Structure formats: structure tokens, C-alpha cells
Image (cartoon, rainbow, N blue to C red; front, side, top):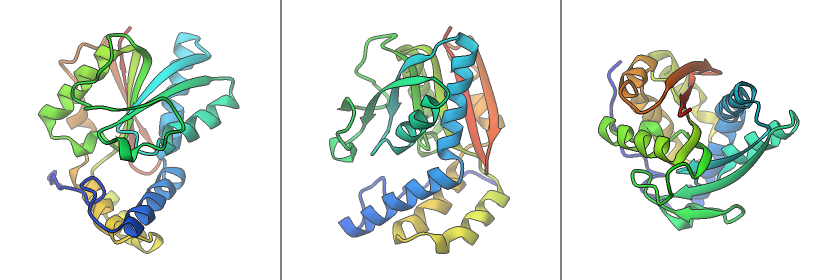
Length: 221
């Protein structure tokens, strides 16, 4: 199945305020029920186990309303792991204001090297063309002290078929367009491994998660 880059409607702020609001609610449902939150939670828990850290700072890039890191942090607290979250997004209007937040370009992060223990993104990588994704990965690795976490979809015909079957669950016409588009332009695990092979990471771990999610941990140290 060939990758098909597509402009997603929610990213381009297309649609009425009501349609955007409905699509954001759909996205929260997708992350909660179909593996988005659990993938980030599992990656952070792995870093905590490997490093012995029970408190870490995390920068969430392209965070939007930051539902994924917030929900993952709630689950991690039950296991004794504390996340101090900062969020960034390309537009200040996308941020919900409940955390330290900054409008910023993901390809040129306005932070000093080693500013955060973790730099994370959720359902962002598939929006980027390969060269832009690699630039984002370099920037994220520069800003991270410990690791970069990439939570994204895996492209496959089965995944696409499941998305079409699930479309009646969603409220917004934006979601009806964006959900299949996200799968079509997602990377496969071999593609992701190839894109990260020359990054300044000590090692890269890629794992499969629930319902066609991948979790990437690019270790800085």
C-alpha cells in the first residue's frame, strides 16, 4: 500500500467552529479507545523503568489540546511516575492554556539543547514529508536529555479497512475525511526505521501497540 500524502482538514482549520469542535471530540475518542493514550503511557513507563526515574519533564510537540499527554500522565501517576508537561503547537489558538505552552515551529524548536527529559509527539509524524520528519527528529533529539517518543499510526490495508468500518462512530465530516487520510499517509515500521537510521540517537526502539499504533523511543543517552 503506497503512502499518499494528504492535507487533513483539521490541520488546515477547514470547517465551521462546530465541525472543528466535533472533530476534536472524535480525536479524543480515537486516542482514548484505540491506542493513542496507551501507546504514550507505555513508552514513558519503559523510559522510567530503564532509567530509574520517577519524575521527568516532557515537551509535547504539536500538542493541540494536549489530551494524550494529560491522559497518559494521569495513568502514570497510578504507577508512581510524575510528568511535568510543557506543550507546543504551531498555532496558539490550538492550545488549551492549562499547561505551560508556547506556539512554536516543530522543525525549529525554540528551546536550548537538553531542555527536557523527554520530547514527545502523538499522531504528528504522519503529517510530515520524510525530509521534514527527519528535521523534526533532529530538533527533538537536540532538545531532549533522555529520549524522544514518537506515537503514530502504522499504514496498512487492514488498518484502512477498519477505519472505514468505524466511521459511523464519529460526529464530524472532518473526521470522515481525516481518519482515512491519516492512515494513507502514515509510515510503516520499516519506513520509520529507515528515516531514523542516521539520527544522533544512541539507539532506536520501535514497538507495535494496540490497533496499528507504533511507539518509537529514540534514546539520547
